[in-house]
Length: 128
Length: 502
Image (cartoon, rainbow over all chains, first blue to last red; front, side, top):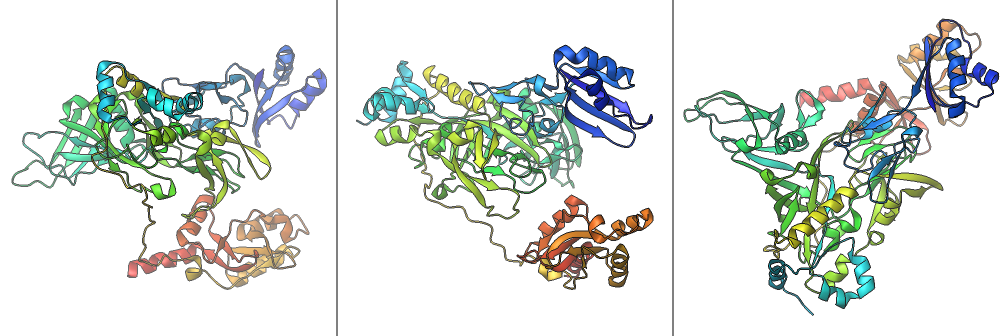
């Protein structure tokens, strides 16, 4: 399950993710991170069974956690199934099925947004 | 055994014509053999659906009261060419909106018209005795126009080179997004389903031949612009009535940071008159070879990285320098199939008859590059040949002195062999001084990813680097990466001033 964790760095440099890993023993995979001097936004992937405990502990430490059900959204009426998105995506979300229709594995999306600009038909958007 | 076009058309009318798509042909020929395939199959339909920038339409608006000679005109703020009579115009697919930039263009106007949406026409004129009116603004739908005739100068490329990018930054091109360090490969074209690939000798493809164009019954006018069958890159000029077109087969698009383009569907029926045509329509993706070219090198003859077939490209992964690189298609194979299937259905349902070319297309021609008569300035013509440089182990203080003395803002940093390894600017030096972090040397503050140029590079290419990376100077290096001079924004400024003096 993908969680979008945002936190403020005003309270000092508490290593939230490292602490949560240490305290819960859950192996957190960081898929994308943007951290500057005032705030951080980190996309993490955790096993579904451990998501509740990770969410609770992150929140207890002052972070905001959002569960991302779906990453990228496709407008079916704009998509022409060209496949320009396929090689752009670092997470291999897009693929051709046997009939050359573009299919999505939304669960893999890391919300990098590369496909949104790469789509010639502006068929992709982020549901944030 | 030979078949005539009249026999084939008679079979269409009698309802017993046998039509297959180009995709089915290789299997049929393998199963039945060439002779039997010729006896059983009458027509092979082809199809392609992709970005075809060289497209547009002639429009006639009818006369206003009082009448106006539309000298300049815009449709939803997209300018159309008005230098043809009074109320005729040519709307080009790639023309961009004056208000929305690359998000909306001629292609979008065409899509809106075909979808049935209203489009705002605005035109201006100086006014004449016969056309006194000076401006007009009105809303129009496709039905309001007397004619909306698509005429595309260059469509249906026989095949198209695939694209990749050797540089360390992302490129945004008409071939889509190209990731750095050979991060992906982008290709276009339907391979063995493409019209010209099924008749590369242009025996049945030629002027006057009826075709499928964006869901309408269209026609081939003749060879397309840049037609180059001699090198395997033939093209077609095609036409059809926009009023018959279907939105499914005409789609406006925007290539990020490149601009507007139009996706269209083109399908050509090939009558199987003889064995030679059976063979050419049995072409497979494996038989059609293209180069993967490096768009990171900004010259016309971009270097080829590798030769591959459409079968390789469609496979999804290609090896470059020992690594697997994923491929992306810009054209839609799903839609190309729909084009070929739709054309097949039209023929079977007796809605579409075939014709042989009334005008032959040259099948040997090779397209030429542009003849340039004015000498293009190169970096060596305006660069500064004096090199003020510094070595990696020198102090920040020395760097500051050199910058002051040389009245420069950039110092190329050299290793002990004189090879360029970094660059420091007045900003880097000032920052280091303010931070006062003690005994730092040049190596600690330099930028190691140096954007550079060569003496023979075109000025426009060097200027584009300054613009793209938001920098003001480029070290000029030789083949061994030794610095031979600097090119600064000031040098470019001088060149610009000279142009005005001419």
